[in-house]
Every structure is written in structure tokens, then in C-alpha cells.
Image (cartoon, rainbow, N blue to C red):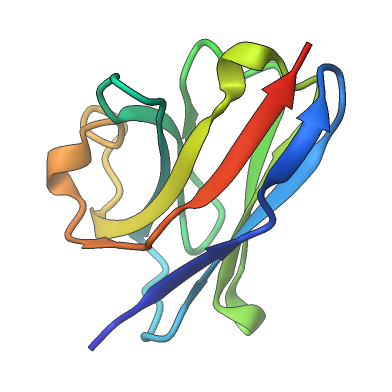
Length: 126
């Protein structure tokens, strides 16, 4: 059974940076997608970013595209989310998930992802 484990969350001040990691225990496929989502208390889970394991294709939510960078390291079976210039509105539980072959039209749709991690908390104070 494929498992995903997130790490790297924490409590920081606004303007700080964090790097989240998502490690999979399963086999990686170059064209398949890995997504990051986040969920704040009382709000729906929202898309943050997605990438193929090959690293060739990426997608970002408009709210993060100038501040966050997603990368994939196949040798380590790990996807990273580098977050810079963090804002209080970035506070949420961050999840990673794996999905099917990457498609720019649907990479932000949480319904296509079938394996999810347990999440890592990011708290940004002003």
C-alpha cells in the first residue's frame, strides 16, 4: 500500500520561509502527478500546487505562484514545496496527494487524487 508522509511544517512569523516535504513509499511514475493542498479550519481543502514526478510540468494556485516553488526528487521519492514570504493567510494543514497522469486542466481538482498523506501544520503569525 502506497503511503505519503509530509514533514517540514511549523510556526513562523510573516515573511519567513518553510520547506515542506512529501515522501512516498511507493513507486513513482514520471508522468503522474503529486499535488499539495491546504485546509484552514472551517474552510474547504484548496489546491496549492502540483507537479509530475519528472518535474517537467507544474501548476500553481494564483495565490502562491510568486512565492512557492514545487520540485520533485525521484532519487529520494520526495516532492518539496518551498514556501517563501509566508503570510498569515497561508496558515493551514498542508496535505500532499498522488494522482494520475498530469493534466493542466485537472491538476487542481482534489477529486483526481487517490492517495493522501496525514498533513503537516503551517502556522504564520503577523
